[in-house]
Length: 336
Image (cartoon, rainbow, N blue to C red; front, side, top):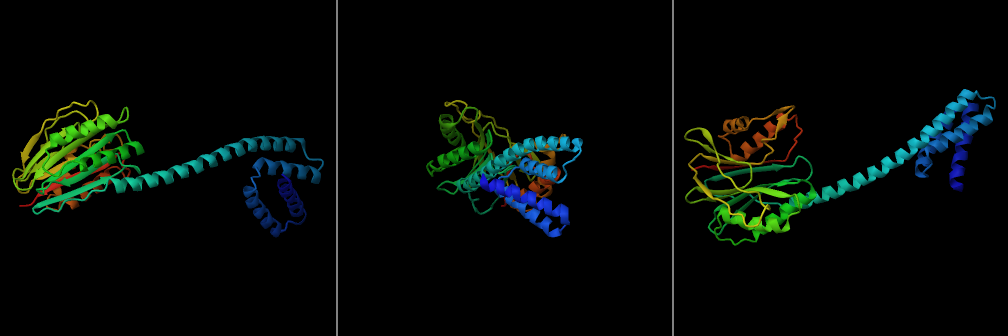
C-alpha cells in the first residue's frame, strides 16, 4: 500500500511540473508512470482521483461543474476498471484454453494418424480438414493379410474434444481386430458394441465401412447411418449413388447390419464423404450434390489425391474460405 501511495504521489508531482513548465521530458516520465501503474495494479479511477485532488490544490476556485464532471468520470472509471479486470481474467483463461486445445489437436493428429495404402492399379486420395481446431470427422485405412483394403469414414454427432478423443477409441478398437479378412457388416457390429458400451449420453457415430478386394475388384460395404457415397461409372460417365442403410453406432447393442457389394470396373471411382458437403453453403444457398460431383467429373483424369484437393479448394471458394463444417473426402480409383 505504501508503494501504491508513493506511485500516486509521483503522478501528482509530475502533473504540477508539467502545468508549470510544459516540459516534454515530463510527458515522457508520465508515459513511464502509466506503464509502472499497470504493473503495480493501480486502477484508472485512482489516477483520476489523484489528478482531481492535485487540480483542486493548483486551482482552488475550480468551477463546480468541472468538479461534478470529475466525480462523474471517477465513478465511470471505477466500473470500467472492474470490467477491465474481468476482461483480462477471461482473456487469460481463454489463452490457457486455446493452449490446451492446441495440445489436444496435436494429440488427435497423432492418435488418429493413418497411412494411405499403396496398392498396384488402385489410386487413393483422402483429405480431412476440421472447420475448427478439433476434427469431428475421421477416416482410417487398414489392410488384411491378403492385402485387401479396408476403409472407414465416420462422423461423431457431438463435437469438440470429447468427440475427437472418442474417435481414437474407435480407431484402436479397429486395430485390435484380427488381420484376416473381416467383412464390413462384421466390423460395424463389433464397433457398435464398443460404442454402445462406452459412448456418452447423446453422442452417436455415423460410419461407412468398405472392403476393397484388390484381386476381384469387388467393393463390399455397410453403413451405420452415414452419408451415402457414390460410384463413378467410367463407361457410362455417370455417378451411381451407393444405396445402403443402417442404424447409427451406439444406439443399441444388438444391431445387425446389411452388407452390399459392387464390382468396380477400370476407370471407376468410389467417392466417400461426410456431411460437410451436404451442409456446405454460401449465404443462404446450400451447394447441390450434383455440383460437387460435377467438380469430381471435371477432374477425373487427374490422380485421386489431386481430385480431392481440387474439390476442397472449390468448396473453400464457394464458402468464401470460411468452412462451416468438417470436410472429409476419400476417392478410390481403379486404374487397370
